[in-house]
Length: 113
Image 1 (cartoon, rainbow, N blue to C red):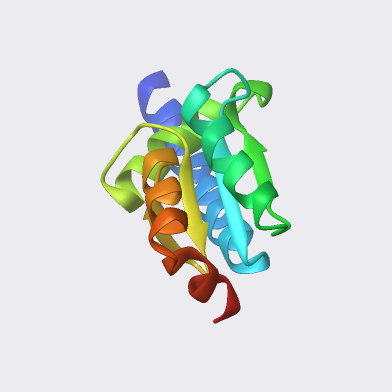
Image 2 (image 1 turned 30 degrees about the vertical axis):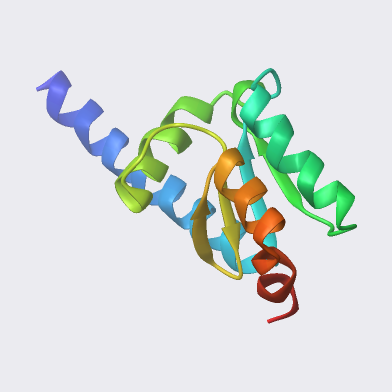
């Protein structure tokens, strides 16, 4: 019986987390789900700093629900690694992807749209 109750609580929590993720992604042009110690996360954040683009950063390792958010992100994007970078509500990948978009000149046009 206890497992049913905890499963129901976990399901509600998953729905709440999914809602949080969707609201975060919809609320800002650029959202980076990050971990403060991750070099690829730093790479992504540095690229946006270079192009002077304000970003919303959600540091998963500094939140009690960070692992749950990361788990839910993987069900949305199909990958579990960080950073997970969203521009205009669309996942564009991680740190290396953001760097490649910047180097190819595509990042700036994505930020305008």
